[in-house]
Length: 381
Ligand code: SIN
Ligand code: CO
Image 1: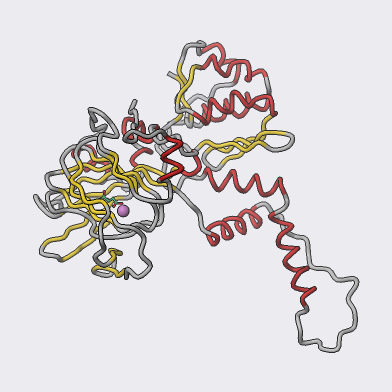
Image 2: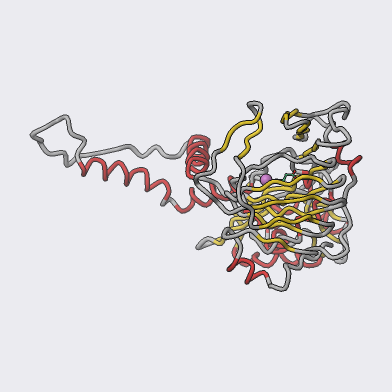
């Protein structure tokens, strides 16, 4: 278990003063930090087809980006190279533990854990990210510079594939040591170069933009065959000009669109699905012999621990008459009195089986939980 200490401030103060506002260097954010993974294991993950990885090299200021999977690692030279592996929390339970320390931020905002290994001089160059990130220093040291957002900074693609930004003024300029953490809000230019072989862990966040939301909502409307209400104007009056789309026509068309977003049931179902959908493959082990509720209750004791598999996205919404639990893109409508059990599934990554046993007498919760266990999304040890 990693315990995060944000300098001498509490989470509430961090959110009020820094979150989405300004970068922060957190010295010894994790005291006595121990890496959950080593560079060899990270390289092993980068050989896998289903795991996204890259090697970036910057020899004599010549930037190159290579995409995995990698069969061998001769690109990862003794200096000026970086291996980056995405969504390691989906594949490596101990690395996934690192994310748990940041769960003071809502589950749906957390994205995944990217891990990089860089050799001296290696980095991805100066760039901007669109999302908040906490970059944790693991083994080794890395020299980081972070600036404030500046609309005048020009972005350009190095070697056609690596988006970078021109040089910027730094407000943080520090060599990070194991357990130190940088918090970087969206749009703040930053660059980090390894001083000695270094592991870095990036806990990244999600924040959809309007086009992400609209295109996902449109997909949901099509998939569920909803949205069939059609424009109607039984009160149409004779007009002096037929070329104009009248203000009242526009208002009516807008209202037609808004009525989709105002459909509470459709909106919650879509939101639960889209916010809980993982972006990367998962490493789940569905049960070979699925259990029914009775078998589940006889096989496990109250003290057994139920774990949420790494990378699983579990969230809920409280609606007027029920709760909508959403796990990895699947929705479960549950009776409101199951809120305690739903919080067990979503608010921590493990709990005692006994904590939800009483909720299993509720058919909707029992069916949802049995399915989640059978699919390997949660497992009991
Ligand atoms: C890295 O670990 O090399 C990249 C992290 C970042 O700048 O977002
Ligand atoms: Co970055």
